[in-house]
Length: 254
Image 1 (tube, helix red, strand yellow):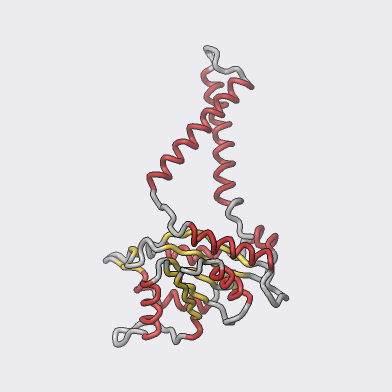
Image 2: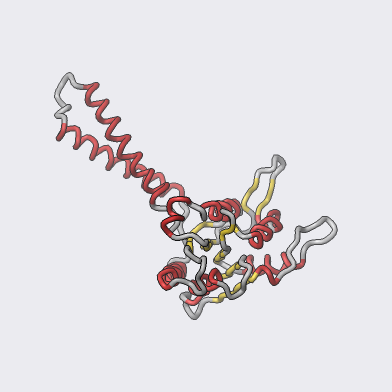
């Protein structure tokens, strides 16, 4: 496996870089690893007259790698300008566009990536304010648009006033390094998702009807509307709770 780390921070040896290095150090010795510090490159948009040499060089590294680790700090609620500039200039190299300006996956389709960011605020504050959310949304919009498959994400919180990465966050980075080494590919099969959804609904319906029978005894003749109403209410509460958990609570960045 070949891993490419794209570092969009302002410091080569800063806290953000330290978390990235912790992920890379946890990869097996047999892995081919390369880090691109974007500030080393003179990155600017391609023109009709001339392509950007720096983009040519980085693009060759991206094409040769199986797995990308995209790492950039969060500033003002969004990714660092260094990383944003790079992605903006890579726009037409990452995706194809049709006649009506729809973006389609390009040559990087089915590669995998891990996204990483850092921020000043604490884990608790980030959980409630979601200050790093937009960084991940931007990364995901760009890379999933290019056809890549996301494996996970990491947030290094509480960087303000510190001079070194936090030990508990280093351990989290090491976990990610081992995870992307042991399971480098993630299945993105839509059919499996529909099958999973079917079994979720089947189980929820069974729970709902069991609660109806236990609480209300509504299966007797002549109680159709009561059966229907209680089923809808219980089913709605269960489904809404599950969706809220997986959509908001489970994925809040800490």
